[in-house]
Amino acid sequence: MYQIQNLTSDPIQQQSLVLPDNTIIQISIYFCLLQIGWFISNLQYGTFQLQGMRITNSPNMLIQYQNQIPFGLACFSAQDLEPMQIQSFSSGSSNLYILDAAEVAYYQSFLEGSA
Image (cartoon, rainbow, N blue to C red; front, side):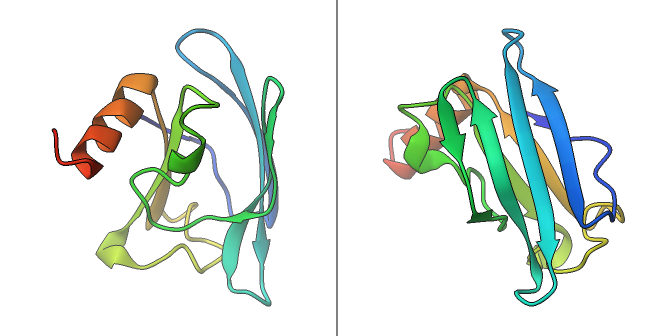
């Protein structure tokens, strides 16, 4: 698991993230004031594309796609508060992490009660 760095309080952000196997994830996030939260406007990995997902506290927000992508996306926040402020990531009160395939598999086995 590694933390996605350089998230700021800019309401629209884009990053290219390199996985351990040197493949690239393109992710775009934005802050929506009317819905008081952060959203993934676009996540692209090869032919896989995800749009319009709210960023919430979760050990793996992408668990339902585990058979399509070899990584996960986790969000953890101080005091279990959801990332609802424009400065949630820049202040460090919320953090986004990329999970590798082994961590995704371990979390799935934990959910199934076999970890």
